[in-house]
Image (cartoon, rainbow, N blue to C red; front, side):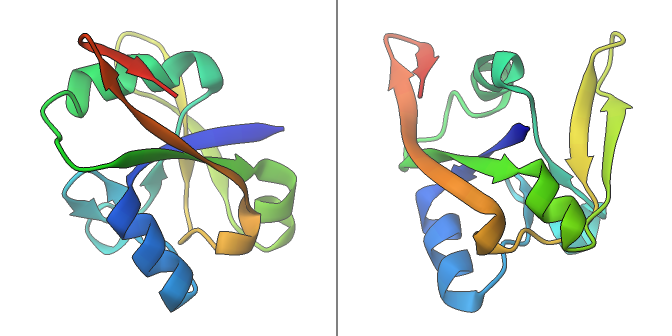
Length: 114
């Protein structure tokens, strides 16, 4: 099973160099929030369009392998993001080894594509 995290390309590149990804969401760190926001495939575009539409720098979507993350000691909790929709939250910094794919992403005519 996979979950997805929307990231700035520069944050992901810095994480690969550092050995861990510590960005919770746009402008907030794992240390500030206590978890890393993630989503299921059907949630990614809606989150991007709601919170990242004004971002002009390159974006990417990280595919996180849940089994690998859990086997490494991460905790994953599905939590209500509002209006009863559950979103996966990762209670650990992301080890780059958990990421199986990094997809370029962005906006075309106001719609998020990845």
